[in-house]
Structure formats: C-alpha cells, structure tokens
Length: 147
Image (tube, rainbow, N blue to C red; front, side, top):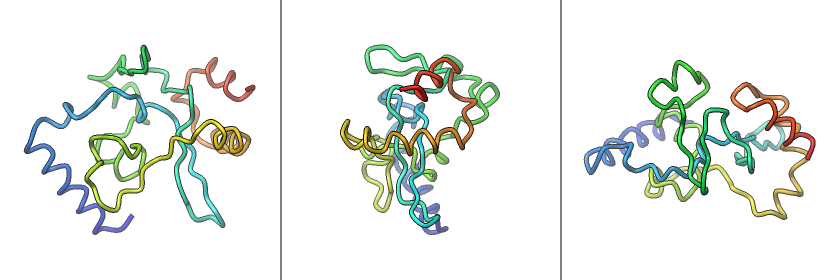
C-alpha cells in the first residue's frame, strides 16, 4: 500500500473519530475476528477471502454477533490481533464495515457466496495451512480442514 493511501486512512479515521468514539462504529459482525486467505495471481495479491465459520479462538460468537473475550488485553493475549488502522491497511474489513464504507480506494476482504466459496475451498485450505493458524482453536481448525 502506498503512502498516499496510508495518509488517506489516517485522515479518514480522524474524521470518523470526530463524530463519535471509533469503537462505537463496530457492529460486532465478527468479520475482523475471522481468518482470511489472500488469493494471488502470479505472486501479486488480488483479494482477501474471509473464511466461513472460522473465528479467532478468543471470539465469542452468538446469534451472528461476535465479542472478543480478551478485548481489553487483546494485544497481549492475541498478538496477531490487528489494531483498527492495521485492519484497514491490510484490507481485513469487508465492504459493509462502518469503518470503511466511505473510504475511497479501499479494497475490502471478500465474503464469497456459497458456490464461489465451495469452488475456492481447496485453495483456501492450502492458503490457511501455509499461514499462521495459532489464532484458531485447534478443534475448529481441524474440523475446517477436514470439511
């Protein structure tokens, strides 16, 4: 990501924070608590896919809402957790996230429909296995990889 976009993100987050505290924008959708896999073509990253039904081991998911069980101490207990700026820079947030809906030039993570997801699942499993799986509960990870 170029410096212009990083500066744009800083300005965007500052504008949001002037309206209300940044944490109040969160809808508890849990997308940023889900692992994702970057799909590349010829070594060039094309897009990031959110994995379905797989969450950080500290995410408490109920009724399609997610709360972090270690939120106040997440950066110590979950060193993989991205702060808000990093979440935006890395493209972790989906397109409907209130943090980025008005951020021009943002490339959101993709939440594929069931057919697309099924078609890409073998590649997503390979991508997940080649990354850091420590944020995921081992039992959940094994279930996902065996599906």
